[in-house]
Image (cartoon, helix red, strand yellow):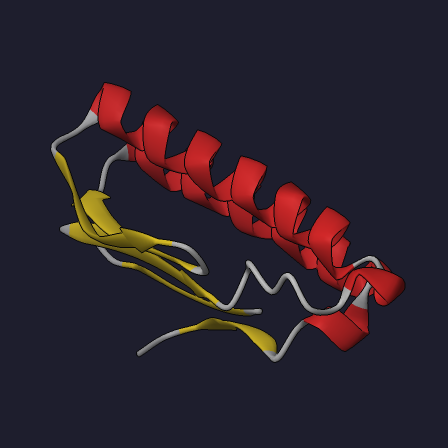
Length: 102
């Protein structure tokens, strides 16, 4: 799982790739995928309630979206990313990274 997020004054972007690998159930990867997917989809829904947003890509193993940046959407993204970081601490073998930037 690779997570990249960008927060600036005008826009916010969240990109999550690789969160749906059906071939590794022995190491809880599917449970981790579920946790990350719930956080990411909740983040998208929350942001879409408070700003213009657009899904760039949404398919198995991939969610990439942007939204306008405002106080509420920044709080939603920050909370989502912190939740994903906590999952990554518990299951580091499932993550390639959680990074802020391009």
